[in-house]
Image (cartoon, rainbow, N blue to C red; front, side):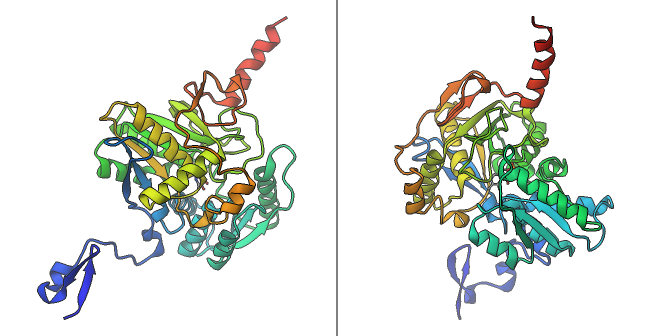
Length: 384
Ligand SMILES: Cc1ncc(COP(=O)(O)O)c(C=O)c1O
């Protein structure tokens, strides 16, 4: 009798009946159902000392990464509301992950997909998007103030204006990008039983808002830590050119739930590279810029909080996309990303406006930069 693999242990099929061998592993009739139900992995040293650590939610186990869930949900919801007509073209600006999700949603719901991206998109992701059937358009110049992101969004608008019935999900401002993460939150409840601290990277703000909202229904004491990149405007720093992709933004996405955050950390590219590479060598579970940055911050939380604090951190994707950047020695040497010793402690600032940060820095006073400006304006008017 042949031997077979079950849960990675070899068992002899002569000793097992068919019924015994039927497992609970998912059997999918539709690619949409391959997304979700991702594992959690315990991460400890070198991020935290022995006995301490955090749970990483491995969203890289989805076919395309963390954005499969919102893409599938947003397209289903738009169809349901009649905003997306049968067979109409989906058009969106993306730095990669959401494009992979939309390519999946386009296949599942039978819609053509156009993705507007920029020259910094990794070539292998560009090819994958095309292979999955999406049309990929690349803008050639960044907007002078809004950067690549703004240039991409303007091109999306041009395509929408020229294409009858075309639909843009608008991941930055569409509330469905938040509600899409309710299942992920429920998975964390069932996998971990309790979550005290949630650590999320922030780009559109979707997953931090969506997961924390649902988790707080179960655990009202939940602390939410946001992780951004240096050079991002989201939490009130001035826009600068950014090496890290996925997290960070040069606009102010409406989906960022500022009130939900207890603190924000900005991380620099070299610090994220150190964390990504340390994750890969010690846990065989790594990812890109956002995963490295989140791991660094979650490890710090595990070192500094009470021993029984249960920490969950979302790892948005796996490492494959980053072999020419984070895991490429020439790239990292060129950008001076390999020289840091393991970062251990963030700097602290009282308010984001205090100074422009250039290394790992935390701030416990999270405000919406747009509202802060609006509050300042009338005050400035009454000053002499
Ligand atoms: C790899 C990666 N990490 C993190 C994020 C940030 O997630 P969110 O947009 O839900 O804030 C994104 C968003 O595109 C991403 O692609």
